[in-house]
Length: 138
Image (cartoon, rainbow, N blue to C red; front, side, top):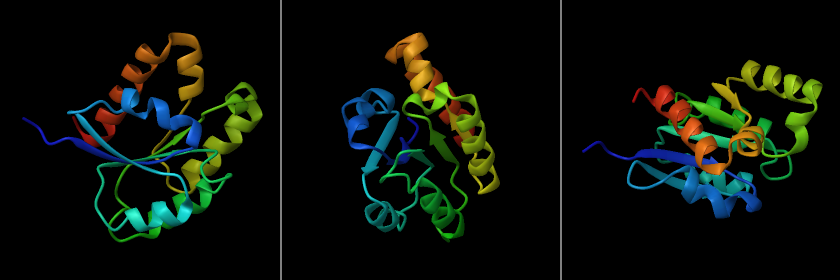
């Protein structure tokens, strides 16, 4: 059996109830962080993937992304940025976030809010897990 895909998820509190749905055991093992300080501390252990909400810790996701990309342990882990709310409805905001995220080293920007609205949680999370598997080579 494969080892679980270890995910550090820099989340917003509202996301906590659905993280188990997004990262089901035994395939995934996730560690949530709600503050920048907590997330930085957690970088001392290796993760297969880092997922971060654009609203993480009141918008500190760019700071976290910059820190991750300079971190000796975490810098090579794929970094996925999540749109988790209405920002994906405003194309110019979504486009700006995507450009800036990728310029700072993010692997991909995921419109998880939009997927959940259009497909429902189960199908949206299934689609999301396919993206994660692609980035970790499974």
